[in-house]
Length: 276
Ligand SMILES: Nc1ncnc2c1ncn2[C@@H]1O[C@H](COP(=O)(O)OP(=O)(O)OP(=O)(O)O)[C@@H](O)[C@H]1O
Ligand SMILES: [Mg+2]
Image (cartoon, rainbow, N blue to C red; front, side, top):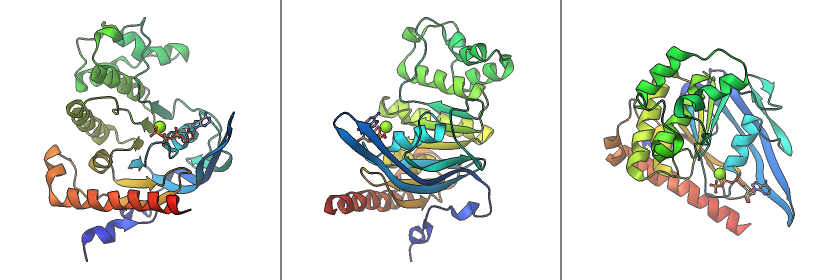
């Protein structure tokens, strides 16, 4: 029997069965009331994300990944089911606990890089953690660009700045919605390595949305595969690859076997939906 078969599990990870659920997704259902009629985006998705875990949510475009992430962040409500954070229902955004990183860096164009990173502290009237910001700018290769404006930075640099902005607030959970989707393949690899390096030190709980199978395997402890809309949980895969991960691993047999198996799950999810 391949080790991969034993690594395929329900929505609970092999390594964290006794761990505390940081986030619990309980029968999450979302139906949007669009002008053209109801849009059924999510159907009874249930899963736990454990403390310090790195979970990727993988699925085709339009299957409800952003919808699920926004519900986790409290940015919008579900139609049915609920999300628990540390056992408490999520009823609205909690920026001190939950950082959100979007596909676009969303920097304010009239503020320089440092002023953008300090902005959330200004609006909350909180002390700026200067030492942490200096360390993060150093780690992300942005030291020296503090006074540059967003238009003077590359897409990768802007996205790194948005990561620094989120991490500076020391949230215990980071929710990331295809944050590197707009970047070229080389920059994307670099950003994934950088993210893993930062995470190995800070060990937040991370939920990372992507429709890229290779990216999901490279980053995650566990990959949750959603079916096409309405998104249902198709399968969950433990990723038993050792850490630290390297780009070379993506060419090795174990990685390629996982790719094949997860691609199969994504495709059979699609077929099931087409047959309905
Ligand atoms: N505000 C909204 N009003 C109506 N329908 C919406 C709204 N937001 C999303 N939808 C619909 O819900 C479905 C799921 O959307 P969602 O953005 O969550 O998908 P996704 O998996 O993130 O897709 P992508 O990979 O393209 O970002 C889509 O069919 C979308 O058109
Ligand atoms: Mg999306």
